[in-house]
Length: 53
Picture (cartoon, one colour):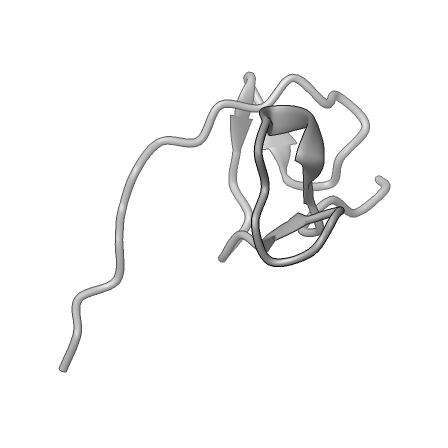
């Protein structure tokens, strides 16, 4: 069985339902590229885990 990664994830989006004290408390994260399979910069990706409070 594979162990799942565990890390602190910083977040500055106050109106996300998973935001608490500048950290993300989502049960999992989904980060996707906005331009296809290969992102070249951080602006090419988005957090699809975001849920409006």
